[in-house]
Length: 78
Image (cartoon, rainbow, N blue to C red; front, side, top):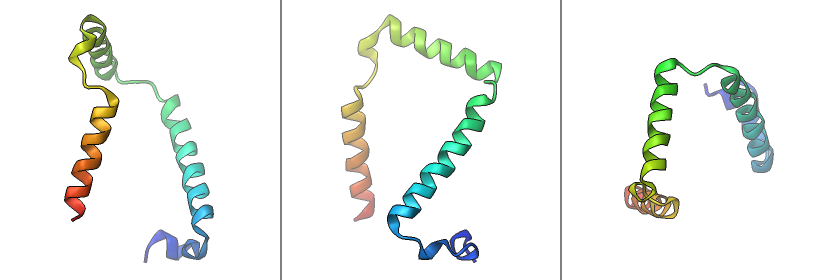
């Protein structure tokens, strides 16, 4: 049985499900935001920021990444 069925959530309207999902995500992200970063992760993030700052052209613009991911998703679905 899914969690939707267990709590009777499958009967909620789509808008209410989306609102619930957003509220759940916000509650989880708040907990995650309060957790300290592992030293290894913090060091890796600093390294990547330094690389991006040193050579901004090295990255891929967001609109290109987004278009590519949409293209891949549509190919996978078909």
